[in-house]
Length: 67
Image (tube, rainbow, N blue to C red; front, side, top):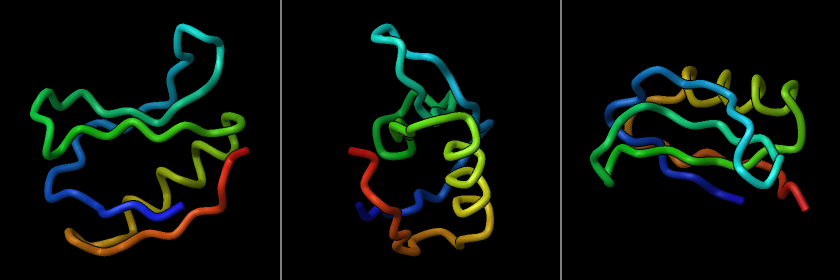
């Protein structure tokens, strides 16, 4: 799975979604900077957050598929 890092990250959190799965989300409302990335566990979500914070704006981030 590949993901393009937006300019604004905001506050990244790991949330439990309505279906019971985990996702990395931010609190930004605009569609260009909104992030919702599904993850397997809390540890996997923390790894995704670390990769997002280390990348620069516009970088392509490659992650392993969660399914």
